[in-house]
Amino acid sequence: MSDPYGDRGNKDRSIANADGQGSVLPKASGKSYAAAGGPFLIGDNMTGGYGKGPDILHGCTIAVDKGEIAVIVGPNGAGKSTAMKAVFGMLDVRSGSVRLDGEDITGLSPQARVAKGMGFVPQTSNIFTSMTVEENLEMGAFIRRDDYRATMEQIYDLFPILRDKRNQAAGELSGGQRQQVAVGRALMTQPKVLMLDEPTAGVSPIVMDELFDRIIEVARTGIPILMVEQNARQALEIADKGYVLVQGANAYTGTGKELLADPEVRKSFLGG
Image (cartoon, rainbow, N blue to C red; front, top):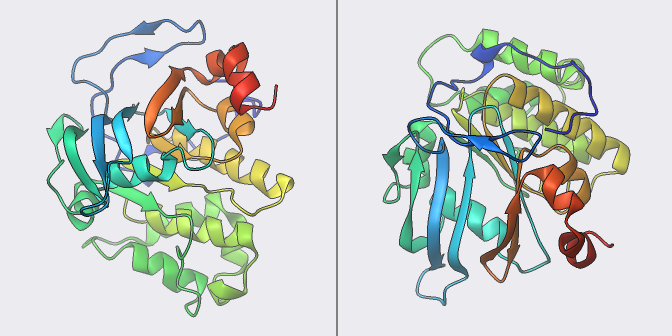
């Protein structure tokens, strides 16, 4: 992974429940090595759409392994968020499958997928604005039956500004701080995989860099991160894997470094 952040990062694996078997982890050279079990999370050859509507995805495949950051990029209307929602069970996958840690979860509801270990942060309406920051985080622990206070402290260590504003209504926070609350609430479930839909939408470049820094820290705990991102160049710089979608299908797939170096990808999707 291209890592402009040096050796910083939270390496406390207990923040997530990242146990599982990885596979095909790309190295800096672009080569890969195989491990048993298949990708930790994969939406494999997915075709489908919403309800009785037309297909939006056409044989789309996206995957992520333990400790990786995989990003989905592409032009507006390419099906990026749709692919993410398909993996999370929010639309009908008419053919293909979704597997988590080797288990076929294609038929499960989003709620059941959360219980299996999937954390999902939508682009909008992702916090309870009238609740305090701490109450939002407590809501994230709704599926847990153990003492979650240690996890909350880890969230505050990851996002120090949230500790300072723990008693403030989340709706009063800046856009970047709200995103930190949303990510923190998802991490309170101790997920096996974290999915982020446009986490830097509408924030300043400085805040975007800070959020990417925190995302790298989460990945270093061992948890896989699958992310849809509109800031394609910056996202690919921190990505182990990148998927460029066009009209609901895979157009280019490779490591972040490979896609950044590909002249066709640069010309068509990164502004040259």
